[in-house]
Amino acid sequence: MNQKYEIAFQGEHYAFSEIAAKNFLGEGTVCHPMPSFEDVFEAVRRGKPELGIIPIENTTSGSIHRNYDLLVEDGIQIVGEVNLRISLHLITPKDVQFEQLQKIYSHPAALDQCRNLIRTNPQIEFVPSYDTAGSVKLIAEKNLKNTGAIASEFAAQDYGMRILKKEIGDFQENYTRFLIISSKKISFGEPNKTSIVFSTRHIPGALFKSISVFFLRDINLLKIESRPLRGKPWQYLFYLDFSGNMEEKNCQNAIEHLKEITEFIKILGSYPAAK
View 1 (cartoon, helix red, strand yellow):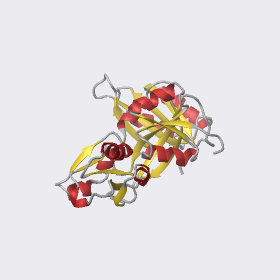
View 2 (cartoon, one colour):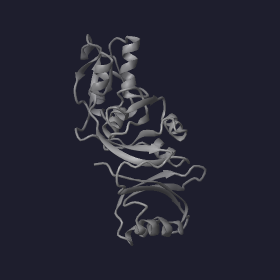
View 3 (cartoon, one colour):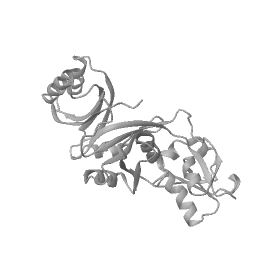
View 4 (tube, one colour):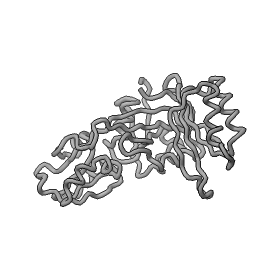
């Protein structure tokens, strides 16, 4: 892309979110690390920077539920998405051997994607950390001995560490889907995918009727995800992705029909689907 963007992400430089952002926007993108997903949303809501990137689901470990919950809040819309293959490597200081390792740090999602390594090495303590790249940074800055991290190869290069074992994830086909979010409408191409969130009325067949509004108009549903509706026990929000955009008449009609049978609905955004 010719235009240079600034984007917020959770973690330290060379986290997978930053790698995905640069794959989507270009290497010249200015990336701003944030401590938490909440901080990413708040920065984007204020327009400083204008874009944010959040992981939303992984093909191995599933959905990132906190980010689904944050999408409901006002002032944010989805403007793009990108898929990234997650290559996980065991990274250590240059003089550490595998037999010497006592602790390995990484983000909980990365640890969850390396269960075989954890299961076959009970002598090592696997420690959850707030970020993959941040785990490498922690070891480098504190000069921790007999300690490793699970992160990207770029994190190893930047912090002067070495890759002790490559591709340690349980599955080679390991991908994370990231969403590009903004407080204003930004176009990254022709939108062909829409995300919404809604809650149904507490009546028989409510979810079936909700899905039917798309079936009746031959609209392809891509995903549905449920999350608890806070303050209302045993009631749920439903996140739904479908093919098409809100400029199309059949999509508009489907949403108008859906409004008649739901208590709450929010359009999260129409955007180009990831390739």
